[in-house]
Image 1 (cartoon, rainbow, N blue to C red):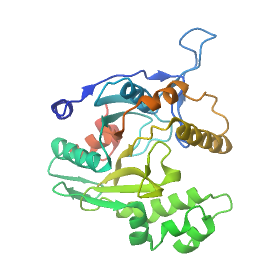
Image 2 (image 1 turned 45 degrees about the horizontal axis):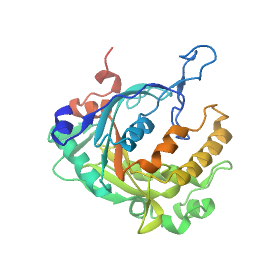
Image 3 (image 1 turned 90 degrees about the horizontal axis):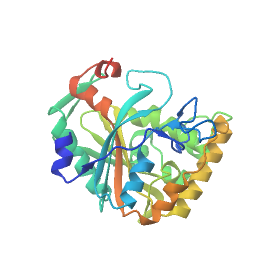
Image 4 (image 1 turned 60 degrees about the horizontal axis):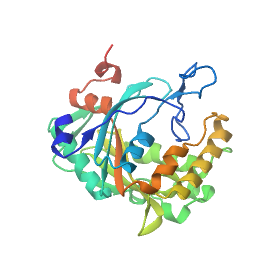
Length: 302
């Protein structure tokens, strides 16, 4: 893997794991350190859920193409595909768009995996991939015109033939359809890149100039496993601040106030960041596919 990136001109970097701002994803639970690292009056630190903010600051400082194999922490129950502590591969390339990143990600799969991989009763050949937008996936696998029902929970539920639960939001119904009807159909016989997500589901991504209802984001599925999440990166600091504040309000409503500040260093760096695309890929899940191991703990040390 390192040879793949070095041959393409990437620099390997390492950023801090203990940070004052662990991320802004609404549903990710970070691990908090019991004591500040810089004395009793110092800032509280968390173990980061991703090196994304730090790596984008490096892009803004002129680092060029960069990658990192980072240890990250996301609290939650262990499962065959999730461990609370795991390795995340992230890479960013200035000048890349969505198409460029899809091609490079597929090239990485072909360079690091066998020609055919199997997991959970599914096999994927790596001689070709499927590309499908989220609206196309909703139409094909759920019979729903997603763009006709953006932000209308009841209309989206009715179109899918489901009954919304009392506390469910539009996003909750969207993900219920996605998880129950669409994701089981992805990565069945070949890798699937699921592109162009609703703008509300891509807080760090640039909007699609051709249709600003959608964002330039993709997820990658192989053998039914969600392997990677990617964006064409947003560089508008004020727009990013608005999205962060909206996500923080939702997180506070759902889980209470987690108590970390906005990452002002990250927001200050955004205007200097070049146009770029970036991706986070679960390294342990890649190892799972490479070996056919049944559980993620089988490919992790100790």
